[in-house]
Image 1 (cartoon, rainbow, N blue to C red):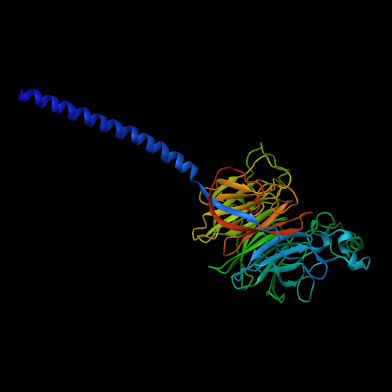
Image 2 (cartoon, rainbow, N blue to C red):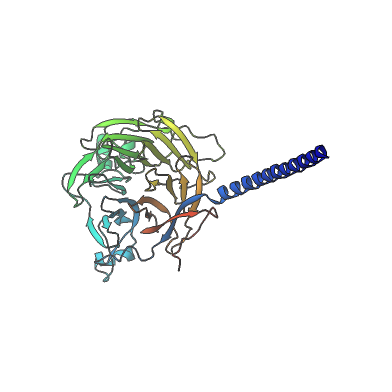
Length: 423
């Protein structure tokens, strides 16, 4: 009887243990599934809302043209550069005394966080060669303002001089292929000229160490006091100078190779990946952990390098994008790890939010159009200390917009569209 009871008890205990084990197993599977679902649903990305009231209206009947650069300084002032020459006749009636409004604003403008204008200057002056077509602006860690340019056109009198000498104009001085802007300029925040690197019409191509050729954008690395130039619309390279002396340091092309100026023809998404950059090389920005991100705009790709030019990796975005290309600029999030990057796309009219480590797109915001939060040729991008994002628009976009950072969000859809303020 005692042995029978013992067997019965053992059976009950074993059955109970089996039930517990099965329950634990089922529970483990459920937990794993829940963890997978939670992980998938828990992908985080910065959330933004456009501020439709920023910046405030400009004084003096000023209007702005193509806005082709933006930067934020240590005081969170937002600097832009635009092209007065891109304005239509009706936008400049005041200049010809045809009407009371309007007239082009100075090319360099800066706004505070409330959208008030705090700086305005720029244009030709003594001691430097102002670009024929402004392009790109950056304010370095010392507060200096740098600009580039991508203007073309023969110098005054070039045709007459060539005819007199009985020789044809060379590439650098023909009206159709002349590269006027072969320089970058450095100013104080009040517009006082400090330094020029390069001279107009002097470029000898992508391996010239003294001149640029239609430089698109600039970035100063505060750790090394080095100026990185995306050079750009005429050349096919990233080039680095000492930011204090202007002395040449190094340069490279796609994949870290010596750049080649061979014309690659139009981009074909079905062709093998190009071994050289196409024009324009549109950005060259350095992350805090020492990687250089270069925008190969028309090739729809972003290439990553070490600061010595060693190639690390690349990513291609919307590879079937033709025309202006899909990778226009890059800016970093303001968390200590700079976990996210923001890549504006002026062809598909959106800003990609990208995981900086994997280069994968997490989500996008924006859409084509002229209302706040929409884009017409979104061109340049920058972030301030609070994580807010600023974008500019070229062609007929002609504006700067502020997207206010609202913290991290759980990503629920790939494309957010217009990020209008919530009620």
